[in-house]
Image: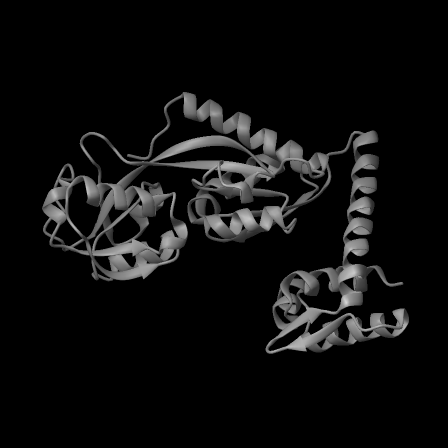
Length: 307
């Protein structure tokens, strides 16, 4: 039985879409379909059936997927244990991260980690926080780097997390906005402004902080555009469509926006590294997690800021 075919099957089973799976595997859809057909012919039973645009697992496919996942995990564990026995930090790390983490934080940490362990490879997927969490829960990512979520939510009871740092939230405006030269934000003065907001899917993070500010200052914001991530929010503000509350980042200086801080009672967002509480975490992923945690906490205690 072909090892690659089992990996292909696992990818399609997770995405339920041959086109998406093929893109993630860097092969053509035709090649992926042929591989799955060959596997089905070898097994003697169908693994998928069409359901609209998706390909869902058959009854037999669902049962087979459980054993394939367990078998591939066991092989990964075996390989990592051998690396560990001979003292090698080697292997592949799958990660998901939000815009702040993927855009600057993770590349810096990966670069530093590679100087110590050059044989480690990485796959990083840029997602919103809710999808970062889902990728970790579904074992599509070993580690997740994301913003706030409620630990009280039973859906997240299988996760562990470590706080990496706290981000100050600021108001960003287009460069030709009347507040451009303001030293601090007076949020009450923004009550008649057009706002660019995160979608409610991000509730618990920046969305929740923005909502709390509006309630505190007793006005209902005029939201003209809702975006799903930081990148889209910043780009929309840069285009002159409104103002927004976003995490402060040194990368804001690269865009056509001006960041204005709050004078006091500054709203914040937390950034975490997360992993499965009871799931297997390969030594290479543990080493990277511990490296990121230790170096970031050192910087955090040194009061590193972007303002």
